[in-house]
Length: 452
Image (cartoon, rainbow, N blue to C red):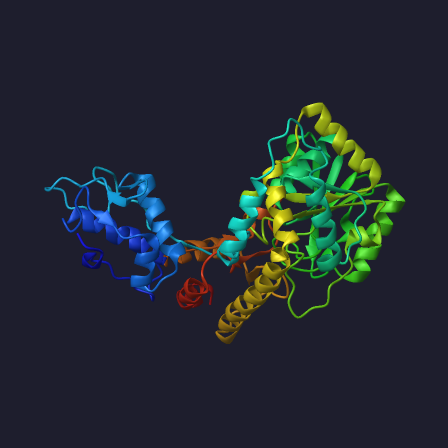
């Protein structure tokens, strides 16, 4: 079959992602006889050019069909159809003999990065360079020096932090687990934001700590509700997760003064710290009090969580305890992701990507916020980060919105699941980084009656 004979058309106004539409169309073509076993498919580049879409779309569709066993690549000769459904079983876009797959939802939950924005040539160059060094028997448990230097420069340039001791980590949750295992002890009480990051909650609990939920307001963590006997305080001052508030400057000063007075360790999760819009940066807690603050960051939101690359800037005794923990347990963050980040930084690609990321997310933030507010729907937490909150009055209303959104083909998040105790505020979270801008725009119209 010639490439031009493929019966494929895509609906750009549909809520279904283009890659899913393409995969469905090719399955259907195999089911109705347009494609047979052994037929050669066009390359992802050629098909993308023909359909007027990005190569990411065609590659994702081919990867899905390859995983399902419908197609296979032959080295040096292209991609071929491998499976043809029985003639008496119309496929309708489904694999033969398998139950219908649930419809793919547009995922607007928070925490998903804009991975498609990473420049492909820079990404490939970084991975090639990362694979060049010969394997070593043992890496520095503190992390690769080149990576730690890149993080130090990044923090100074983009977060205003002149970092002292920098340790590589496997990400924010991995760093919390290490702090719980090295600095804290079973039975210690740890204050954490309510609502807050539940992976951190589980990390502390599984290490034997008692989690003490502390409410947040429009200025961040409420310090009047922090018990004096807690050993550590975990917070996300840059863009509180999930409510989206920023900790005020005065409250930041009060928090580090409280930590010094009571002997507490402040664990600063710099969630969405690089992503701020229309607001001046506030001083990091680690810049105000490097003696009592362990600052945690990650590349998960600015690049991709697949790298498993994060960092910790901590007081020397804390850093030493973490390194001792790694030595005793034989654990350390993987160097592969560190090498990629170091290479991206070395060529200036990381800085360029961050500038592009801020512009893109700022425009998306404006799109979502303006669309909703013009329809009379209030939003919170939209001056930073990659998600905002649409408040509501009850858990029942929040759940009803989630269900209605799913019926409309959209996945949202809700505040209730982010509480340790009884929920006191309710609403739905809309993340705007994880899909294309075209898909985001198409999802907003059906969301208005859901959230209004």
